Image 1: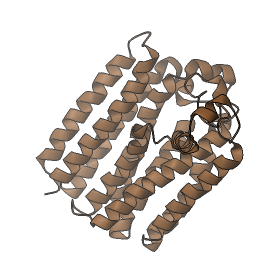
Image 2: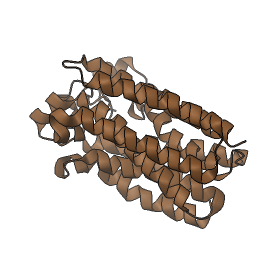
Image 3: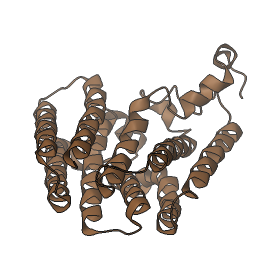
Amino acid sequence: MVNTPESHQEPLWLVIIRLLRWHKPEGRLILMIPALWAVFLAAAGHPPIPLVGVIILGSLATSAAGCVVNDLWDRDIDPQVERTRDRPLASRSLSVKVGIVVGMIALACAAVLALYLNSLSFWLSVAAVPVILLYPGAKRVFPVPQLVLSIAWGFAVLISWSAVTQNISTSTWLLWGATVLWTLGFDTIYAMSDRQDDQLIGVNSSALFFGKYAPIAVGIFFVGTITLLAGVAISVHLNNIFWLSLIVAASGWIWQIFRLLQPELPIPTYGLMFRQNVWIGFLILGGMIAGSF
């Protein structure tokens, strides 16, 4: 670890916790949610408990690895962004060497957990790795890098669903599409807080790509999410409890869209809306579980 005043004050283990973003659980939970959607829907509300444990731990390990990879890519960019300048690699409170080791350990943990899965799920896990590794570089060359992140999120659905059924069905792809669109929605909101810094640095984001139409784009993504979730519910015959949860979730998304259409929103509002999507995701999960009986 680099010898800085901050590193003397903060224990190494706590710096690593910050590197993995475990002090900000909403970002870890929001990846876990689609994986849990898939495992409970594929198992008609009764997945094997050990498999649920593997899915939860696997999403935590994968998210941790993704955070480290992202910070390694962005260690020279993050100091220029208000929201990210205090990250361990950006602030030089952790060395690149330690970051690489931590990232490799997280990936190794995810790989060990993937061995518990069937062959289809295992190879889908392998296929997800290049997307996770390349996503941070996408913002340098691709106009909508959030789409790459959304595809990475979508692997959580494919892996978890196939872990139960050993195949991928139409229902799986409907849930995958809902997850991709939901991720595009909430991560575009998240990116809106960094628009000014991203523009100065010269990196891409969906918030910059859509510009003044970003709130409308988010609205389209959320409407698509609702439509595809409804399609999943019909295909797997969920009961009225799910439909009630989807109506409440849709109300939350509609409220967010109207808020985004207001001029001059305070920057913290975007982070608040991102966190609200965690609760919306869990609400839908509860509806899926209760709706399966």
